[in-house]
Image (cartoon, rainbow, N blue to C red):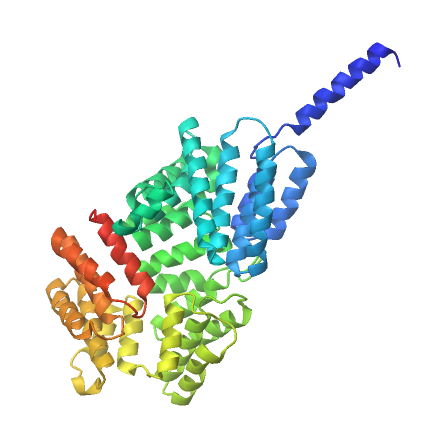
Length: 500
């Protein structure tokens, strides 16, 4: 070969090599299919598609990002501690890979920021709170920079919207912590940003891959952080969703919505008709949700679903709560011995921890050996299913002699207050809430704190900000009661809405 030919060949190879080393962030057809498979929890299919993409386009870094999403979803579907620990190692490696490639793309900062958010959650689950806070700060700074440089880049709204909403739940007297980390935001701001993202997913095809998970996030955040819920707006988001029976996360979100809208029969219909042929990883929590829905309607076939959840779920969340509800079913059927055996498993069973308020309440019931009052239990479960008149029928005209303990008497007035509140008899509800709070503030049960919370909400609805603020603060003053975390979160969100 002549020298000139060698030179030309060398230059050509260098050009090709440089082109191959240049990083790209391209949502190819394979990447979109892989992402959709990941969100549908079909991780094997997602990995096969990503392998094909890597072979075809090794310079594309979107597969690196999708793999981080798969790890993250895996770790939370079954609380896989090995995967959770692995996220810390692999995400650091992935971040290094993305940082090492030059080139301008809004996806570069986005991918790194979202991996930092995943790292933050993984560290928080391992109780490494300082490291988690630092990761959130790094993610926030990257997203802010991205927002400044690429204001029309809609995927940025997902991470920054979640952070803004989360910061908005922090009470005023702890906002200095967020300030130290350089974080700011409000619940309203975060929700609006996620709504803008959802709108973009329906109008811009390049962002359509984000639609399903944005619906899931918005539904969960609105129902947990917002007070005035536009049920019809949330309901309409699910109308265009296709093949929802094959999308476990969307099934979860829609079921959560129907529970919140007091449409328990819709939950039963939705979950009982879901596809039993699982292509991907099963979301066992759907069995727990369907069991709850059936129990709320006094359908004791729920026991089989609770046992299925306990048998198949490898994690620890709601394990104690599931045993408690199995025990309740036996109690409601008049099987006192069956109740005692199953409630004892809330303490004796090796699997399960006090991870949620529901699990903590189950453990407390088992340890205190306080068998629930059957009348109140039926009323409670029917109320939770949105069967308000049936719940009221359980309590109406009952003699107080049927509720001999302090706990039962507090629960009796509390249950009536909740029913009248939902039946729009606000004056009766307010009086019963106040009685429950007055009589129960010095006891370890949640009835007084929850009553204070709902009094705050009633005054907020009336536009009486002073009274509402007073009662939200009273809610937070009560400590060491059942359902502490969820009640406190709602009271803090109320104060946030009122600007205090």
